[in-house]
Amino acid sequence: MQAFVDGLIAGGAVPASVPAWLAYLGAMLAFGGVVVFGFVLPVAGITTWVERRIMGRMQSRIGPNRTGPIGFLQWLADGIKNVLKEDIVPTAADAPLFKLAPYVVMTGFVGTFAALPFSSALIVADLNVGILYVTAVTALVVVGILMAGWASNNKWSLLGGVRSAAQIVSYEIPAGLSIFPIVLLTGSLSMQAIIARQGWAPWQWNLFENPFTFVAFFVFFVSALAEGNRTPFDLPEAESELVAGFATEYSGMRNLLFFMAEWGNLYVIGAIATTLFLGGWRIPWALEDAPVLRAALELATFFVKAYVVGVLLPIWLRWTLPRIRVDQMMTMCWKYLVPVAFADLLGAAGWMVAFPAGVPAVRAALAALAGGFVVLFLWRVRFHIRNARLTRRDLSFNPLSTARVPG
Amino acid sequence: MGLGAYLRNIKDAVVTIADGLAVTASHMIRKPYTVEYPDRLPDGVRVQDRLPFRYRGILEVDLEICTACLACERACPIDCIVIDATKDKAAGGLVMTRFDIDMAKCMYCGLCSEPCPTGAIHHTPEFEGADYSLESLVRRFVKAPVVAYKPKKTGEVDPAVKPILDRGLRYVSEFAKSEAGDEA
Image (cartoon, rainbow over all chains, first blue to last red; front, top):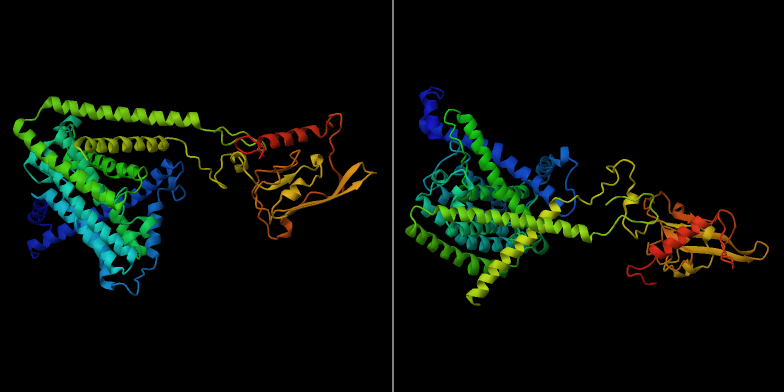
C-alpha cells in the first residue's frame, strides 16, 4: 500500500504541496472505503439472503423468492426498510453510550479487514503481527456488545451483554491456543507468510500438516463460532429467552449494524480459517506475467474457501443444532476446548521437534482420512433421503379431490 | 469422569453433530413442500386438490342420500345445523323443508360428518368462503321441500342415486374414521 502511494507521489499524481502523511492517510481512507462499501457490506447483505434461502430449504420451505429473481434483492429491500425506520433511543437509556455501541461493534468487525488478505497482492496492510492483530481487534466487538447491553437499561439487554462478555472472553483462549500451532510451524504472525508456507493442493495445507494441526482446525472453528455469537452459541441474542439480547432496544439502522457485523463476521471467521489452515489464496499456476488474472484467480480461490468454511458451514450448523445452555457453553470451553487446545499445542511443538521437515505419509494419510469422512458423510445423506422416501405417506390423497397429485 | 468417558463424550459430540448435519443436508436437496397459494400455483392445479388427507373445509350436504336422521344436528356442539323434517304419508316418508348450516358459526370440528350413516354431510377441501355479510354464510341446502332418502328393504339402490351413495359410503369409511381405523 505504501509502495503504491509512493509510486503515485513519484509519478506526480499527488501535488507536491501535499505532505506525504496526508497522501498516505487519504489513500488508506479511500482504500478502506472501497473495501467496506465494495466488499464488506455487499457480502454481509447477500449473506442474509443466502442464509434465508438455505434455512428455507432445510425446513422444506422455499424462503424469500418475491423480491427480484429468486428473491435476490431481498437484502437491499431489508436494508432500505431499516434505514427508513425511526431510530428510537429509550428515555431511560444512556443515550451517548447507546448510540455509540453499534459503531464499536462495527469497528471491531471492519477493522479485521485491514489485515485480511484477498490475494498475494491485494491486502490493505500485511502486518508482521497480522494474526495477532486480527484476534485482538475482533475482541473489540465484546466491548460494543457489553456497551449496548449496559446502555439499554433493560434486563434482557444486560443479560445478553453479560453472556456475550463471558462467552467471547472464554472462547478467546481456545481460539488463540489453536492458532499457535500454525504460528509455530510458520515462524511468523504475518498472514501472507502463513499462506506462503502452504501449497495449493489440499495435502499441502496446514490442515493436514500433522494430526495436531488437524485437531487445531476444529478447535479453532468451534471457538470462532462462539466468538461470532453464532448458533449453537447464540446465547447473547437467544430470541426465546432474551427477546433479542443486547439488541432488544435497538431499532432501524443501529439494529441492522449489529446484524451486519454478525453476518460479516462469518466471512472474517472463514478468511482466518482459510489463511491458517486451508492454503489461503494459493493457486497451482505462478502467472508471473499476468498480474491481473493472477489476482482475480487468487481472490476467487480465497473467497470461495472463506465463504464455504466461514458462511455456508456455520449457516448449515445453525439450522441443525439447537442453542446450548450457558453452563454447557462454559463446560465446552473450559473442560473440553481449552485442555484439548493445550494438549494440541504441546503435541504440535513435540511433532516439530521430532520431524522438523514434516512427514509426507502423515499428510497423505490425513488428507485421505478427511476424504473418507466426506464419503461416509455423503453416504449418510443418501441414507437419510432413502429413509424419508420409504416412510413418507401419500399426503395428497383426498377422496373428494378432483385430481390425484403426484407427491 | 475418567479419560475414557471424556474421549467418548468428544466422539459422541462429533458423530451426532455429523449425523444431524447429514439430516439437514438431505432436506437441503429435497423438494420443498411449499405451495405458493394463491398466485404461483402450477397451471391447472387448484390448491384444494393438494390439501392433505382429512382436510376439513366448508361443509356440503348431498340431499339425495340424506336420511333426515338428525344425527348431525344432534352431534353439532354449537348448533350451527338446523334441520326441519316432518312425516308425510302421502309423499312416502320424511319431508325436509329446511337444512341450514351456518358456516359463520361452524368451527370445522368434523363431529357432524362422523355419525352420518350415508356420508351425506361431509367436509369438502374448499376453504375460500369469505363474504361481505354474515347471512350469506348460511348455507341453505333445501330449496324446495324434498323427500328424505330411505334405503329399500331389498337392498336395491336407485341407479340415479348409486354413484352419490357410493361416494358417501367411501367417505364414511375412509375419511370420517379416526387414524387408527376404529369407529370413533
